[in-house]
Length: 246
Image (tube, rainbow, N blue to C red; front, side):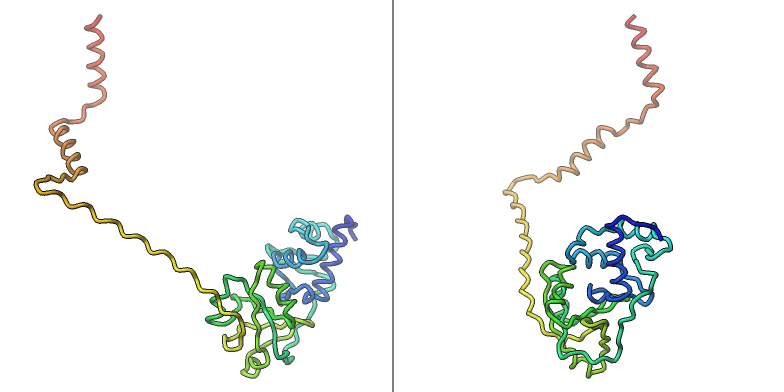
């Protein structure tokens, strides 16, 4: 096994625990192949004491230096190869009465109007405590909006809520009627553009000229009848003038 610098070896141990045992402790959910997005992983590490320094190049070093390979980095995703990804999804587990999720401020109004919907190919990550939900929400927004989900009531309508690990639940969407959240603040009205003042009416007896059209007519009149002269003619004429002066 390749010997790593102490800092990288400690990071490898943390990642092995995260991927192979408890990704839910870090608020992460592995995809079916065991991958997580690199961006989400670095955000999770940044929230942990002592790991705010972790960057993508540290992950690249772990994926490239260890033999046999322990981590695999594929474009913007990473996973642990040994001993293998944790299997934490528990379908069919009844959720608690209430679950929580914290959303960015920019999503406040859309969620208030139409409910929660996961991006394509992803799932909503709900927490069983307000504190955990806010911790996860601060990774995307410094002051997220807390949303309370009536999980059991939603589940009774046939909505799927899968438990993941000890404190997380996953869902594709939550209809608006099962959400409790503050009313979004009113949006400031945009100032209406001022109408341009109409041009002053000309005084009686005043002649108003359309200046651009007038100038174009003057230019056309001066150039009328003139033809473009070849360069060789003008050059020959200048040469003859010089010879006469001599």
